[in-house]
Image 1 (cartoon, rainbow, N blue to C red):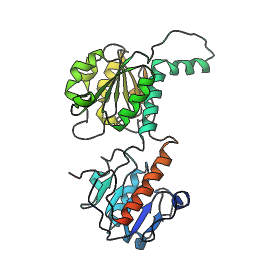
Image 2: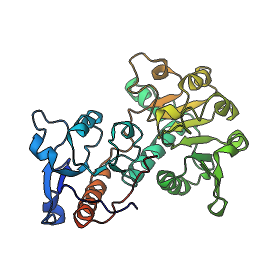
Image 3: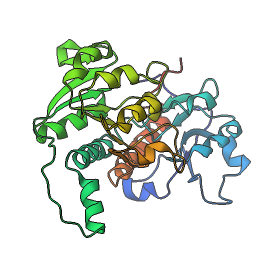
Image 4: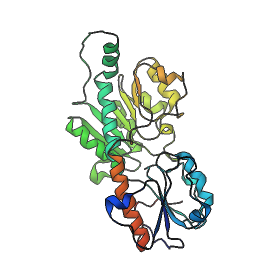
Length: 316
């Protein structure tokens, strides 16, 4: 929680219209405006922008930050992403920042599970065989009984763990700091954990502590045939080190985030053996929108009544 927002402006700027029709009327003392961040010629006027105190930013529209210098009375920004590291440098001093914690838990966890199952059960191979009219069955790896280490055990990691346990996997939790009371290891324990890991899943945010956290040393510690999954941030995994390990087919990978991103055409990672890539879509399922709408409505009502907004991000 943060301190209550002092309303020097009562306008709120939202990315979607008509939420009041689904969730009930807005508080009488706020003025609600809508901008989706992409529709041509739809930007609010300067008069509207001058009165905005709370901005719920459009999801997955990086260029929307251009509006920030034109919001002179802005007090709080609500991001619909869990990670806000790229937004922080653009945020004016004194403006509160709130992230979308929890909005992507289910979507990201099920996508991570899908990547794991696809890699373990050779689904890319079977898709290629279908297209080529081949019928060449063989036994595959399994998720059941596999030893899975989740690196970055937060709300998404916990959601993934529930799904992995349902598939009869054995899960080890890792976070920046150890939490022995709930069975969470520290990142410093990775050298002891990785040699017995079949599947490592990175669910890390991007910050100075996590950039290239998983590099050549960590990859080398994994046993032959291990699967590296990344659904956090691309820069937390060393791309060159991963290419070195996958080129010889020692390790496999299933990635929703990469570095660089977007991944250029003809980048060697696109054609590395045993590497499955999706284009940063883990959080973007149908489960996201209803959760995001409910958070927006809650935050607008809190803003209108001077209550602390949810999910504050420290500015230091």
